[in-house]
Image 1 (cartoon, rainbow, N blue to C red):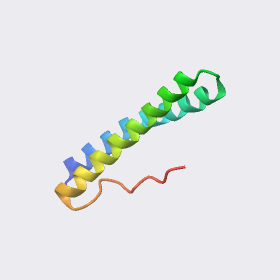
Image 2: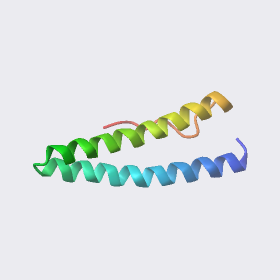
Image 3: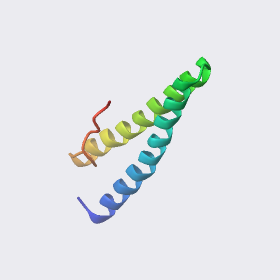
Length: 75
């Protein structure tokens, strides 16, 4: 894998990983509350970010024959 592609992949993953951490925190906070709409919104945000990471990884695999990073285990 080229150095530029590695940098791009690391940057993309770092940015989205930070967003994922925030979204996971928001889900935990929403679960602690009683607002069903906030809980649903937090869950949708988290799933959307996970989907964005998987779409990028799948596109990268299609273009270059390998994933840009290992598949994340979901908890």
